[in-house]
Length: 249
Image 1 (tube, rainbow, N blue to C red):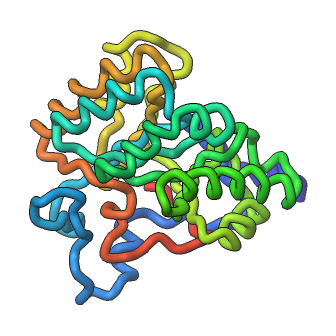
Image 2 (image 1 turned 120 degrees about the vertical axis):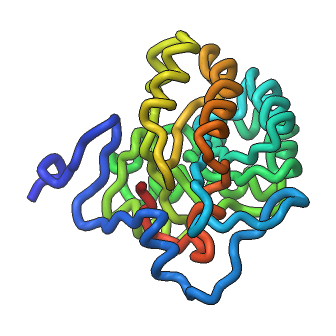
């Protein structure tokens, strides 16, 4: 079977054949039922997404010029997010922002070195794309990521195998605003609010001008609907992200 025939497309997402996708609820159900809830990144009580109506806010392809503004918003709203960072032109260009993201309790993930579609690459190229960003983040924060998001959602068994060898699990998404194609802040917010669901993973980009201004409304309206914002590891807890696994709500 050719690679093209193995692909499943939808909502700008592509996943390779033969890869099992695990929902947050499935991950939690498979975990030890006696395990404690996820530790909170604040002084508040731990979040238990087995009981709370949780949703994860994630940002791809930064840091960038709007990231400091976004971090100010998240701090003011007491919300923690997951950032999937690009290496060459972003992590290296903005080490102070990477350091701040980690210091303020956000989860740092890997979004490759140059945003190459991983399912188009040979295994050694996939490893290079991921490994270089792993090293760059570790040098800045002292900790290598355990999560990665493949650009455009392009993944397959080879990508999964390389990710597993690097201790990385893959995180896909359930809600996206296609904010790379519009600077309309209202439209970006509307799209996310229309797609929001319990155990959802929101995909946004903090490098586009229309996105960061949409975040306060998204947070406020979802809070009003009873949602609790968590990082991706908190969403999966008491399970821990498993290297090589593909998490997709």
